[in-house]
Length: 604
Image (cartoon, rainbow, N blue to C red; front, side, top):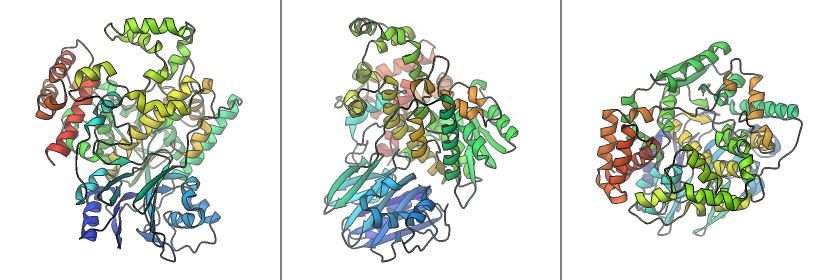
């Protein structure tokens, strides 16, 4: 696990520039530094030593020294690949070396053979080719930028700030999309010209030309198997995934909440230490549940209660580490639990991905709970929706609006914040990209599938890949901690994607088959619990004077006045404080953007 950065393009002080870039992301790898500069190519790495601590140094060369690679992540099937590539002259026991051996054998097909989380840049000296790839689900980040004949890449955008060819410009064109999604849903970023390499893609740079190739596609080949067989398949693949994710030369701990996902992982892995955060407000506190499970398993649980003051004070640092604005309140909680774990261990397991893979969101249940409503002809439902859209958006009205729209026209994910109409009223800059344009390729790819599969595909491609996994990477790495996500695994997805609808969602429950598998190993009743997410009391804190005044001050700032209808924002904040409307998600969404903007475009 580490951070990587580099560039192709001649500069005056290449080694110094490269070192500055890698130093900027030192938090990703404080254990060691590696730099390679030859001709017009510079590859750098900061290392967090996990596997083959003494021998896995990077940049790493092939035996003939024609190939050199820098790599961020873990290849969990590296031992199997070493057996398959047995004729290669191995020099280390590290997983990094399988990238060199695999590229020699398979070339650009290398990523198809890898099981793990990865982002790497491999340079072929003889052919003057840079080959980069990102894992199938985007667990590890990879950004790139081109300007004036120079190509830059890095694990985090902030590394580009130290290169003389990087021009920092704010990209306002995706602000409307952020307001709706609560994160950046595009390959474009908030830094003009900086692009994210999408999950499941490789990138080749040759003669200054970038070629992108998709090597992994999501598929949902539904199989109608006996329920007991499906539950057994889930049990087997999860046991296998956890075993692979426990491979390490250092101790592995785990995050632990009160829900099924982390409880299942901890019950399978039985690490010596688990970590939990909570709050003084009982309904947001999961510590008691976590301590109960840890006690029953005979393992240690370390916990911390986050105060309101700590939470608000750390936001600037959070936004710096995130690189781009994101308004999920759980980001801060994730930072604190990662910080807690980093005092003891270098690696933790975490439960991201189970909801998207196994059907865990209550939103999916509407397709089952209200199937009767879908029997009404669409033109009637659509007419009802049009009328209801003119009424105040309360729970029942919202349902009628949603069910009278085609999924392809309205669904952007489980965490939608502002509506299209609200964004138009709020923003002072033009809306240049519509949400429907962003989600259209995914809906077209899954045309003919059930609505639940379409929703899963949207949530995996956007919410999971571009928000959940991004914040998991950034908040663990901010604390020099490696986060591993056993649910987000090719083999696990192969089983999960084949589940028929009623093994995922019924009128009674979500994640039906997964809960049954978890029930066999979890020693308490966490498998029954309804989804809480990562509960944070920001909704309540926003009504208290100190937090209210801080947000109000931010809404009156120059950036706020430049981009937003501040009168509308202040009214929403006031209504929330007075209990007239629950506006906390919308208020927090804009507030987080403004905090991020201040960090990167006002203070820096």
